[in-house]
Length: 209
Image (cartoon, rainbow, N blue to C red; front, side, top):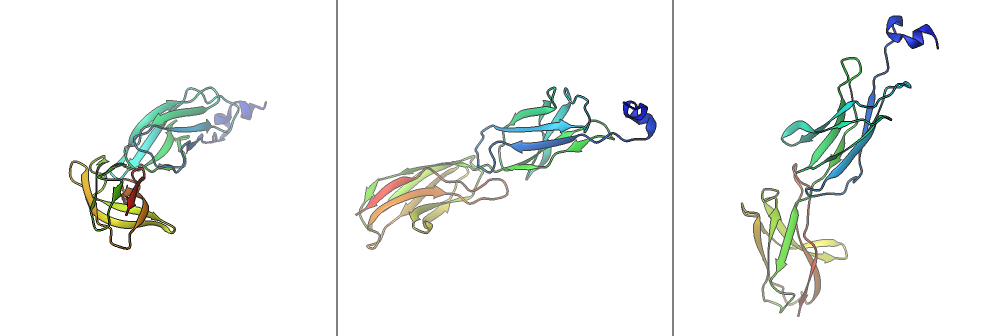
């Protein structure tokens, strides 16, 4: 080992900046108040240990950026930390090791869908009668409106829509016409916005006779 390799700071060489690499193990799947794991590794480009370093996990939402968690690297420089997104969030891992070697990972986004519960009044109705579907959206301020949809060969068709109250509750009504005879697979769905991804209730079946 040369003198300059052993004592780089006296030879004018600048140590390589450590780099953090972050990723989320749940990819693009929308979640609702579920923990997701952010993991990565810190490397300084040398054989020196990178354990015991503090990693700051920053979260950016529509409201701004804040510190979501802190992690400590293991002996091999890896780290793992769980975060709990409340709405659409972009995470980045930052290593603040000093002015000459601070660094930041690439960002990873988590889409958070609201929980939608739907309770149909009947599982079988006559044509020209009314199906009522009541339910709740959580959190209550996630969306302003919901849609009652039926599955088709091309996707989903909107049957009715209505507002969501301040308490998250909604009530939808649909009256099938003479041409609407048959069995339907339905759901109640929401649109996405800057705070939440689009969401939907579990499907339910209704027969129109």
